[in-house]
Image 1 (spheres, rainbow, N blue to C red):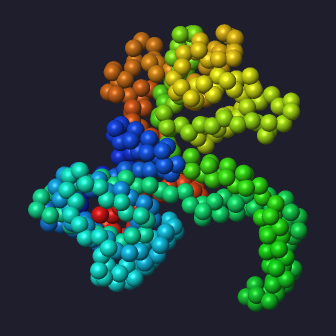
Image 2: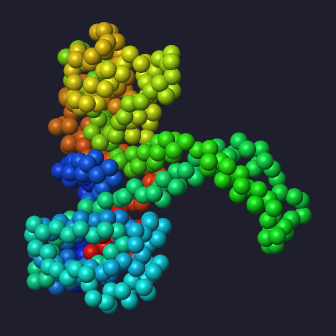
Image 3: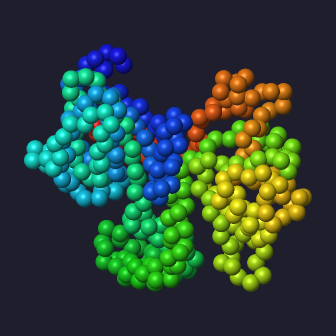
Length: 373
Protein backbone atom coordinates (compact mmCIF):
# COMPACT_ATOMS: atom_id res chain seq x y z
CA UNK A 1 0.00 0.00 0.00
CA UNK A 2 2.86 2.37 0.81
CA UNK A 3 4.34 1.74 -2.61
CA UNK A 4 1.03 2.48 -4.31
CA UNK A 5 0.63 5.67 -2.27
CA UNK A 6 4.17 6.75 -3.20
CA UNK A 7 3.27 6.13 -6.84
CA UNK A 8 0.30 8.50 -6.60
CA UNK A 9 -2.64 6.31 -5.53
CA UNK A 10 -5.32 7.70 -3.22
CA UNK A 11 -6.06 5.91 0.05
CA UNK A 12 -9.82 5.55 0.64
CA UNK A 13 -11.13 4.96 4.16
CA UNK A 14 -14.64 3.65 3.58
CA UNK A 15 -17.69 3.63 5.80
CA UNK A 16 -16.36 5.79 8.63
CA UNK A 17 -19.99 6.51 9.57
CA UNK A 18 -20.10 2.90 10.82
CA UNK A 19 -16.66 2.70 12.40
CA UNK A 20 -15.54 5.87 14.23
CA UNK A 21 -17.86 7.04 17.05
CA UNK A 22 -17.55 10.83 16.43
CA UNK A 23 -18.48 10.38 12.76
CA UNK A 24 -21.16 7.81 13.62
CA UNK A 25 -22.90 10.42 15.78
CA UNK A 26 -22.27 13.23 13.29
CA UNK A 27 -23.65 11.30 10.30
CA UNK A 28 -26.68 10.15 12.28
CA UNK A 29 -27.49 13.65 13.55
CA UNK A 30 -27.15 15.03 10.04
CA UNK A 31 -29.39 12.31 8.63
CA UNK A 32 -32.01 13.03 11.30
CA UNK A 33 -31.93 16.76 10.44
CA UNK A 34 -32.03 16.25 6.66
CA UNK A 35 -34.40 13.30 6.56
CA UNK A 36 -32.09 11.53 4.07
CA UNK A 37 -29.52 8.77 4.78
CA UNK A 38 -25.89 9.85 5.08
CA UNK A 39 -22.44 8.25 5.07
CA UNK A 40 -18.82 9.35 5.44
CA UNK A 41 -15.63 8.35 3.61
CA UNK A 42 -12.13 9.82 3.83
CA UNK A 43 -9.66 10.32 0.97
CA UNK A 44 -5.91 10.79 1.39
CA UNK A 45 -4.09 11.80 -1.81
CA UNK A 46 -0.28 12.13 -2.15
CA UNK A 47 1.24 15.44 -3.30
CA UNK A 48 0.69 16.52 -6.90
CA UNK A 49 -1.59 13.57 -7.66
CA UNK A 50 -5.11 13.33 -9.00
CA UNK A 51 -7.59 11.33 -6.96
CA UNK A 52 -9.86 10.11 -9.75
CA UNK A 53 -10.78 10.99 -13.31
CA UNK A 54 -13.72 13.36 -13.93
CA UNK A 55 -16.99 11.65 -13.00
CA UNK A 56 -20.28 12.28 -11.22
CA UNK A 57 -21.89 10.70 -8.17
CA UNK A 58 -25.49 9.54 -7.84
CA UNK A 59 -25.87 11.19 -4.43
CA UNK A 60 -25.15 14.65 -3.02
CA UNK A 61 -21.76 15.23 -1.42
CA UNK A 62 -20.25 17.70 1.02
CA UNK A 63 -16.46 17.80 0.76
CA UNK A 64 -14.71 18.86 3.99
CA UNK A 65 -11.00 19.60 3.53
CA UNK A 66 -9.03 18.37 6.54
CA UNK A 67 -5.34 18.68 5.60
CA UNK A 68 -3.28 19.97 2.70
CA UNK A 69 -4.73 21.60 -0.41
CA UNK A 70 -6.69 20.23 -3.32
CA UNK A 71 -7.56 21.87 -6.63
CA UNK A 72 -11.14 21.09 -7.69
CA UNK A 73 -12.72 21.50 -11.12
CA UNK A 74 -16.53 21.20 -11.29
CA UNK A 75 -18.58 20.94 -14.50
CA UNK A 76 -22.28 21.01 -15.33
CA UNK A 77 -24.09 17.65 -15.33
CA UNK A 78 -24.48 15.55 -18.45
CA UNK A 79 -27.50 13.97 -16.69
CA UNK A 80 -29.23 16.09 -14.03
CA UNK A 81 -30.34 14.26 -10.86
CA UNK A 82 -29.06 10.79 -11.80
CA UNK A 83 -30.46 7.72 -10.05
CA UNK A 84 -28.40 4.90 -8.59
CA UNK A 85 -29.17 2.91 -11.74
CA UNK A 86 -27.65 5.65 -13.94
CA UNK A 87 -23.90 5.57 -13.16
CA UNK A 88 -21.44 7.88 -14.84
CA UNK A 89 -19.52 5.12 -16.66
CA UNK A 90 -22.69 4.43 -18.70
CA UNK A 91 -22.05 7.91 -20.14
CA UNK A 92 -18.25 7.89 -20.05
CA UNK A 93 -17.84 9.56 -23.46
CA UNK A 94 -20.25 12.40 -22.58
CA UNK A 95 -18.53 12.86 -19.22
CA UNK A 96 -15.08 13.05 -20.80
CA UNK A 97 -16.29 15.60 -23.38
CA UNK A 98 -18.02 17.75 -20.74
CA UNK A 99 -14.89 17.76 -18.60
CA UNK A 100 -13.02 19.54 -21.41
CA UNK A 101 -15.38 22.51 -21.24
CA UNK A 102 -15.13 25.57 -19.01
CA UNK A 103 -15.74 24.56 -15.37
CA UNK A 104 -18.45 26.19 -13.28
CA UNK A 105 -16.14 26.04 -10.25
CA UNK A 106 -12.33 26.11 -10.36
CA UNK A 107 -11.06 26.45 -6.81
CA UNK A 108 -8.51 25.28 -4.27
CA UNK A 109 -9.80 23.89 -0.97
CA UNK A 110 -7.70 24.45 2.13
CA UNK A 111 -8.15 23.02 5.66
CA UNK A 112 -11.54 24.12 6.99
CA UNK A 113 -13.04 24.73 3.54
CA UNK A 114 -16.19 22.97 2.37
CA UNK A 115 -17.63 22.25 -1.08
CA UNK A 116 -21.17 21.12 -1.95
CA UNK A 117 -21.61 18.86 -4.98
CA UNK A 118 -25.23 18.14 -5.98
CA UNK A 119 -25.59 14.70 -7.54
CA UNK A 120 -24.75 14.66 -11.20
CA UNK A 121 -22.16 17.45 -11.17
CA UNK A 122 -18.88 16.36 -12.74
CA UNK A 123 -15.79 16.73 -10.57
CA UNK A 124 -12.12 15.89 -10.33
CA UNK A 125 -9.41 17.09 -7.99
CA UNK A 126 -5.62 17.23 -7.73
CA UNK A 127 -3.61 17.44 -4.51
CA UNK A 128 -1.13 20.31 -4.56
CA UNK A 129 2.29 20.51 -2.90
CA UNK A 130 1.60 18.24 0.06
CA UNK A 131 -0.53 15.28 1.08
CA UNK A 132 -4.22 16.16 0.95
CA UNK A 133 -6.96 14.65 3.12
CA UNK A 134 -10.68 15.31 2.99
CA UNK A 135 -13.91 13.82 4.21
CA UNK A 136 -16.87 13.29 1.94
CA UNK A 137 -20.29 13.44 3.56
CA UNK A 138 -22.58 11.56 1.19
CA UNK A 139 -26.28 12.40 1.34
CA UNK A 140 -28.44 9.79 -0.37
CA UNK A 141 -31.61 11.64 -1.32
CA UNK A 142 -35.02 10.07 -0.99
CA UNK A 143 -36.45 10.75 -4.44
CA UNK A 144 -39.79 10.79 -6.20
CA UNK A 145 -38.49 7.79 -8.13
CA UNK A 146 -38.17 5.94 -4.80
CA UNK A 147 -41.82 6.79 -4.16
CA UNK A 148 -42.67 5.46 -7.63
CA UNK A 149 -40.86 2.22 -6.84
CA UNK A 150 -42.76 1.95 -3.56
CA UNK A 151 -46.06 2.47 -5.40
CA UNK A 152 -45.17 -0.18 -7.97
CA UNK A 153 -44.17 -2.59 -5.21
CA UNK A 154 -47.55 -2.06 -3.60
CA UNK A 155 -49.38 -2.57 -6.91
CA UNK A 156 -47.43 -5.79 -7.44
CA UNK A 157 -48.51 -7.06 -4.03
CA UNK A 158 -52.17 -6.04 -4.37
CA UNK A 159 -52.67 -7.00 -8.02
CA UNK A 160 -51.60 -10.58 -7.31
CA UNK A 161 -55.12 -11.03 -5.88
CA UNK A 162 -56.63 -10.19 -9.28
CA UNK A 163 -57.61 -13.51 -10.86
CA UNK A 164 -57.76 -12.00 -14.35
CA UNK A 165 -54.11 -10.98 -14.05
CA UNK A 166 -53.20 -14.49 -12.94
CA UNK A 167 -54.84 -16.03 -16.01
CA UNK A 168 -52.56 -18.08 -18.33
CA UNK A 169 -51.85 -16.81 -21.83
CA UNK A 170 -53.24 -18.89 -24.75
CA UNK A 171 -51.65 -22.16 -25.78
CA UNK A 172 -49.60 -21.91 -28.95
CA UNK A 173 -48.72 -18.23 -28.61
CA UNK A 174 -45.63 -16.90 -30.36
CA UNK A 175 -43.90 -14.40 -28.08
CA UNK A 176 -41.64 -13.40 -30.97
CA UNK A 177 -44.71 -11.75 -32.52
CA UNK A 178 -45.99 -8.90 -30.29
CA UNK A 179 -49.36 -9.03 -32.03
CA UNK A 180 -50.16 -12.42 -30.51
CA UNK A 181 -50.17 -11.00 -26.97
CA UNK A 182 -51.17 -7.41 -27.70
CA UNK A 183 -54.74 -7.88 -26.46
CA UNK A 184 -53.57 -9.56 -23.23
CA UNK A 185 -50.95 -6.89 -22.62
CA UNK A 186 -53.54 -4.16 -23.19
CA UNK A 187 -55.80 -5.84 -20.62
CA UNK A 188 -52.93 -6.06 -18.14
CA UNK A 189 -52.00 -2.37 -18.54
CA UNK A 190 -55.62 -1.32 -18.04
CA UNK A 191 -55.84 -3.44 -14.89
CA UNK A 192 -52.61 -1.99 -13.51
CA UNK A 193 -53.86 1.54 -14.13
CA UNK A 194 -56.99 0.62 -12.19
CA UNK A 195 -54.91 -0.75 -9.31
CA UNK A 196 -52.79 2.42 -9.28
CA UNK A 197 -55.96 4.47 -8.91
CA UNK A 198 -56.94 2.43 -5.86
CA UNK A 199 -53.68 2.87 -3.96
CA UNK A 200 -53.73 4.92 -0.78
CA UNK A 201 -50.92 7.54 -0.92
CA UNK A 202 -50.37 7.03 2.81
CA UNK A 203 -49.56 3.36 2.19
CA UNK A 204 -47.01 4.37 -0.44
CA UNK A 205 -45.51 6.90 1.98
CA UNK A 206 -45.26 4.21 4.65
CA UNK A 207 -43.42 1.89 2.27
CA UNK A 208 -41.11 4.74 1.37
CA UNK A 209 -40.43 5.31 5.08
CA UNK A 210 -39.63 1.62 5.56
CA UNK A 211 -37.23 1.61 2.60
CA UNK A 212 -35.44 4.67 3.94
CA UNK A 213 -35.28 3.57 7.58
CA UNK A 214 -33.94 0.21 6.41
CA UNK A 215 -30.77 2.03 5.37
CA UNK A 216 -30.00 3.25 8.91
CA UNK A 217 -28.16 0.81 11.16
CA UNK A 218 -29.01 1.21 14.85
CA UNK A 219 -26.26 0.89 17.40
CA UNK A 220 -25.25 -2.73 18.09
CA UNK A 221 -26.40 -4.31 21.34
CA UNK A 222 -24.75 -6.88 23.59
CA UNK A 223 -27.52 -9.49 23.70
CA UNK A 224 -26.37 -11.50 26.72
CA UNK A 225 -25.68 -8.45 28.84
CA UNK A 226 -28.99 -6.86 27.87
CA UNK A 227 -30.90 -10.08 28.56
CA UNK A 228 -29.30 -10.24 32.00
CA UNK A 229 -30.20 -6.60 32.64
CA UNK A 230 -33.79 -7.15 31.45
CA UNK A 231 -34.24 -9.96 33.97
CA UNK A 232 -32.97 -7.74 36.80
CA UNK A 233 -34.87 -4.51 36.07
CA UNK A 234 -35.88 -2.32 39.01
CA UNK A 235 -37.86 0.95 39.20
CA UNK A 236 -34.50 2.80 39.34
CA UNK A 237 -33.10 1.22 36.18
CA UNK A 238 -32.44 3.82 33.49
CA UNK A 239 -33.67 2.92 30.00
CA UNK A 240 -32.07 4.58 27.01
CA UNK A 241 -33.63 4.52 23.56
CA UNK A 242 -31.33 2.60 21.24
CA UNK A 243 -29.21 5.11 19.33
CA UNK A 244 -29.90 5.55 15.63
CA UNK A 245 -33.11 3.53 15.84
CA UNK A 246 -35.73 5.52 13.93
CA UNK A 247 -38.99 5.29 15.89
CA UNK A 248 -42.56 6.49 15.52
CA UNK A 249 -45.88 5.77 17.24
CA UNK A 250 -49.18 5.26 15.47
CA UNK A 251 -52.55 3.56 16.09
CA UNK A 252 -52.69 -0.13 15.22
CA UNK A 253 -55.81 0.26 13.06
CA UNK A 254 -56.11 3.92 12.12
CA UNK A 255 -57.63 4.85 15.46
CA UNK A 256 -60.90 2.98 14.99
CA UNK A 257 -63.23 2.79 17.98
CA UNK A 258 -62.47 -0.03 20.37
CA UNK A 259 -58.88 -0.49 19.22
CA UNK A 260 -56.74 -1.48 22.19
CA UNK A 261 -53.31 -1.45 20.58
CA UNK A 262 -50.63 1.00 19.52
CA UNK A 263 -47.86 0.36 16.99
CA UNK A 264 -44.28 1.41 17.53
CA UNK A 265 -42.34 1.58 14.27
CA UNK A 266 -38.73 0.85 15.14
CA UNK A 267 -36.41 0.83 12.13
CA UNK A 268 -37.48 -2.03 9.89
CA UNK A 269 -39.76 -3.63 12.48
CA UNK A 270 -43.31 -3.05 13.76
CA UNK A 271 -44.09 -3.67 17.44
CA UNK A 272 -47.64 -3.78 18.84
CA UNK A 273 -48.29 -2.71 22.43
CA UNK A 274 -51.45 -2.22 24.51
CA UNK A 275 -52.95 1.22 23.92
CA UNK A 276 -52.44 2.04 27.63
CA UNK A 277 -48.69 2.11 27.05
CA UNK A 278 -48.87 5.01 24.59
CA UNK A 279 -48.06 7.76 27.17
CA UNK A 280 -45.05 5.79 28.43
CA UNK A 281 -43.77 5.05 24.93
CA UNK A 282 -44.29 8.64 23.80
CA UNK A 283 -42.40 9.95 26.83
CA UNK A 284 -39.45 7.62 26.23
CA UNK A 285 -39.29 8.56 22.55
CA UNK A 286 -39.40 12.25 23.45
CA UNK A 287 -36.87 12.10 26.31
CA UNK A 288 -34.54 9.46 24.92
CA UNK A 289 -33.69 8.27 28.43
CA UNK A 290 -35.96 7.53 31.37
CA UNK A 291 -36.07 5.65 34.65
CA UNK A 292 -38.49 2.73 34.70
CA UNK A 293 -40.30 4.41 37.61
CA UNK A 294 -40.85 7.51 35.46
CA UNK A 295 -42.75 5.75 32.67
CA UNK A 296 -46.12 7.54 32.89
CA UNK A 297 -49.64 6.13 32.84
CA UNK A 298 -48.86 2.65 34.19
CA UNK A 299 -48.73 0.97 37.57
CA UNK A 300 -45.45 -0.36 38.97
CA UNK A 301 -45.87 -3.91 37.65
CA UNK A 302 -46.87 -2.79 34.16
CA UNK A 303 -43.89 -0.42 33.99
CA UNK A 304 -41.55 -3.36 34.59
CA UNK A 305 -43.37 -5.50 32.02
CA UNK A 306 -43.11 -2.74 29.39
CA UNK A 307 -39.48 -1.97 30.24
CA UNK A 308 -38.52 -5.64 29.99
CA UNK A 309 -40.12 -5.95 26.58
CA UNK A 310 -38.46 -2.77 25.31
CA UNK A 311 -35.07 -4.15 26.29
CA UNK A 312 -35.60 -7.70 25.03
CA UNK A 313 -36.85 -6.40 21.68
CA UNK A 314 -33.83 -4.05 21.43
CA UNK A 315 -35.88 -0.87 21.30
CA UNK A 316 -34.22 0.42 24.47
CA UNK A 317 -31.06 -0.60 26.27
CA UNK A 318 -29.82 -0.55 29.84
CA UNK A 319 -26.76 1.63 29.36
CA UNK A 320 -24.61 0.16 32.13
CA UNK A 321 -25.56 -3.47 31.49
CA UNK A 322 -22.77 -6.02 31.97
CA UNK A 323 -22.48 -9.77 32.18
CA UNK A 324 -22.37 -11.35 35.65
CA UNK A 325 -18.87 -11.68 37.06
CA UNK A 326 -17.64 -8.47 35.49
CA UNK A 327 -17.26 -9.78 31.94
CA UNK A 328 -17.71 -6.31 30.59
CA UNK A 329 -16.09 -4.30 27.83
CA UNK A 330 -13.05 -3.43 29.93
CA UNK A 331 -12.16 -7.13 30.20
CA UNK A 332 -12.92 -8.12 26.60
CA UNK A 333 -10.89 -5.64 24.62
CA UNK A 334 -13.69 -3.10 24.13
CA UNK A 335 -16.32 -5.73 23.38
CA UNK A 336 -19.35 -7.10 25.17
CA UNK A 337 -20.67 -10.60 24.52
CA UNK A 338 -17.81 -10.98 22.04
CA UNK A 339 -19.30 -8.22 19.86
CA UNK A 340 -16.95 -5.30 19.07
CA UNK A 341 -18.27 -2.05 20.52
CA UNK A 342 -18.46 -0.47 17.07
CA UNK A 343 -19.55 -3.53 15.11
CA UNK A 344 -22.52 -2.81 12.82
CA UNK A 345 -25.58 -4.98 12.57
CA UNK A 346 -26.02 -6.94 9.36
CA UNK A 347 -27.04 -4.41 6.75
CA UNK A 348 -30.25 -4.36 4.75
CA UNK A 349 -30.43 -6.11 1.41
CA UNK A 350 -32.67 -6.06 -1.63
CA UNK A 351 -34.49 -3.18 -3.38
CA UNK A 352 -33.95 0.17 -1.73
CA UNK A 353 -30.95 -1.00 0.31
CA UNK A 354 -27.72 0.99 -0.04
CA UNK A 355 -24.90 -0.40 -2.10
CA UNK A 356 -21.76 -1.56 -0.28
CA UNK A 357 -19.32 1.21 0.61
CA UNK A 358 -17.46 1.12 -2.67
CA UNK A 359 -15.93 4.57 -2.26
CA UNK A 360 -15.21 5.09 -5.96
CA UNK A 361 -11.82 3.43 -5.59
CA UNK A 362 -10.86 3.57 -9.25
CA UNK A 363 -13.23 6.18 -10.60
CA UNK A 364 -15.09 3.43 -12.46
CA UNK A 365 -17.95 2.62 -10.04
CA UNK A 366 -20.40 5.47 -10.11
CA UNK A 367 -22.65 3.86 -7.52
CA UNK A 368 -19.94 4.35 -4.90
CA UNK A 369 -21.19 5.81 -1.64
CA UNK A 370 -18.42 8.39 -1.44
CA UNK A 371 -17.26 10.84 -4.06
CA UNK A 372 -14.48 9.32 -6.13
CA UNK A 373 -12.10 12.25 -5.68
